[in-house]
Length: 270
Image (cartoon, rainbow, N blue to C red; front, side, top):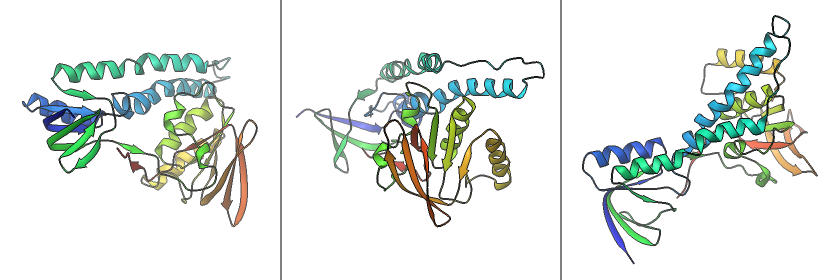
């Protein structure tokens, strides 16, 4: 089995992993980086950046709707297919450019899940790798939920690859990811429900401002259900039905798609 040694081995090619790898390489260290997904990380490929690209269309629709009758005669129509194509024009080039930038600095790249064999050795791409230091920058995944039908849930990664704009959507979790996506879909014409087990959305933010935000989002048609526990998710012929316990009663809501945007994310396991 081929073996290699590095001064620093980085796991995860997002902004944190890239930054660590580049600083070490520029300081003369022998560096390698591995990622089981496309190089570039969540923020650039399936998080912050693509969200911002899509969000501007929602903002335009919201502003024109608010000004309809005050100078705006007609709210523009959107093409979800064209929006995703526009988003892809930014996202698709990220992995190649990221790899080129890292390679130019002499950093070795590995495109597979590394598995630790000992505290200073791991296996990746059929090679035994040892290193003086390891940097784990694997990011987070949504909190794992435990109820019947959990396999039907989508995540934020799936959001950016929806083939068409859903007529309705349910978000389990009112953290910042769920709040951002619920606003976006609702503004684009989707009927949205947000279910959370807490008393309020965005629990880590200022309650007064969160209340103002929720009031505004409710006026946009978003239905919030707090202090609720999910019982199960049922697959129907075309839709999904979420069963949840609220005020000591089992209730249900039907939607085209159900997203897991629950808070309390977990670190990705490599």
